[in-house]
Length: 140
Image (cartoon, rainbow, N blue to C red; front, side, top):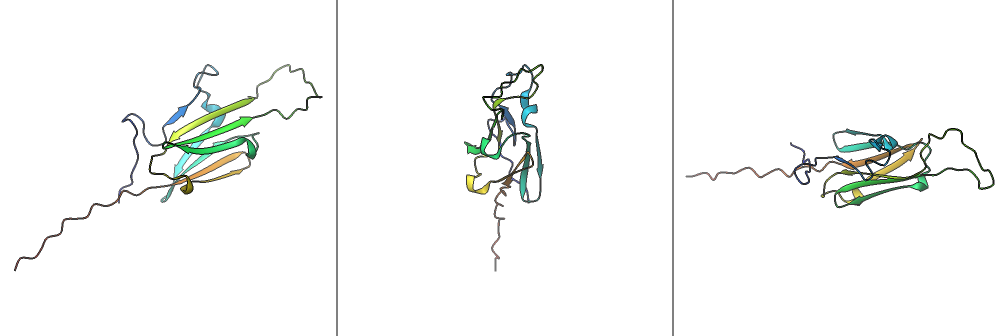
């Protein structure tokens, strides 16, 4: 039985990534939300690294066939505690990534869990409906 792999505009395939701010840091900033996608018999699973992000600062949505993941990185320093940084390498701000998953997916089908800095999103596979085989009538 073949699986249905959605396509959008002939040049985008399943899980094609669309960084909304590709040149923000002068290079591919997808390293801020490194994502592994693997499949099982019944689903596609996304594992998104979001270290240092609180669960309340993560939003996952489905928009026109795109899985959209938005995360906001915040510095947890009190206003009273002003810091003079000698070097600052940790990103602070918000970031969004999107992946085309198909227009047949419904928001209720998607499951998400955030644990130990990793967001796990599971999207069920849609099975292509099998065409009915031609049946012949016996001639007597």
